[in-house]
Image (cartoon, rainbow, N blue to C red; front, side, top):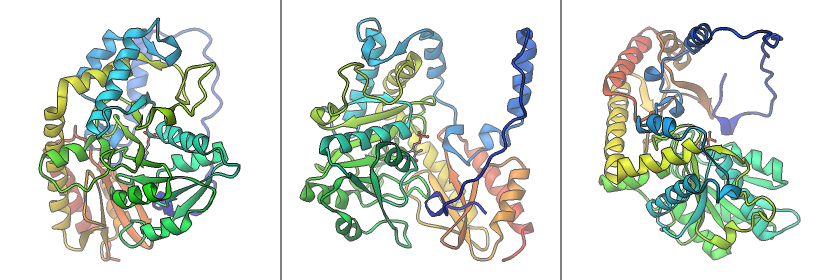
Length: 409
Ligand SMILES: *Cc1c(COP(=O)(O)O)cnc(C)c1O
């Protein structure tokens, strides 16, 4: 049975490899190859517009397709600041726009390939700043897996703080975990599993009092919480507006309507950012050459949509979420696993067999995540702004049909 990532037991699933495939001897005609690609993509389980299982299945803003055509053959990598001055200028300005959005117009940073690379960068800064022999980083167990990856790669001991029934860590537990080897704290705004915000303000206070850097993973939050606040939603402080927040990241390819792979990493302090040794390469990221279309698309989409455009996209995606939440919680036996904050929501049930519901819906082409957390089954959705209200209605209707036929538990 699938389990919430943070509850997975240690284990090593082995995925079957494809059968050995010969390298083609002579080329095949382009049209034939394209037809085969189309057919193979058709083997994917869910059509994009019915897929609520993963945010990436959303289509980016159409302007990014036009930018893609304009930026063919360009690239960005920091050592190319003379030859690729145009592309790098777009990257740097896009980063500054994101700093302004997140409360630190002076923040420096880079476009990354996404949240994983951004979080690796954050760990690298913490480790390098402290220069400890046995560095430790403290993070709630609900963190993204990239922190475990980074800890493994960089020889950091990750101290994982368990969460309560509400899936949030208690700040007292974080404080107690600090040792002389601690080099930084991590919190999520919000955590990806159920979209719930860690107590960022308490983390930031603790960071100030203990003199430790705090990294806020706002993979989802950075591109929705500021606009929710504009729209009048109650949003707790989560960004550089809190003095204790040292670094932040957000993913353009989740709610930012940008193409995969586009992430932003930001550091409030330029000096901290420069703890990455760049003497030979100038490169601050863990990847190097990136397609110029990503910097250009980010710049273009931020300029084209502006705050007003993102407010509209936020209002739309929250309307889609509310339509689904109202519809599914009206089904007998269905409840939310926690009150939703953003576009990640999860449902649970003590009476309806949710695995059966999931399988029936998947057979009809509806995509959603299914798993179990601390003994409770759940169905999880991550809703992209490109989803429609019609798709929300279709999803709810399919859920009703499936729940009516599913066995009782
Ligand atoms: C999605 C996500 C990430 C990073 O994902 P990428 O696939 O590398 O972009 C990091 N943190 C959280 C909380 C996420 O939801």
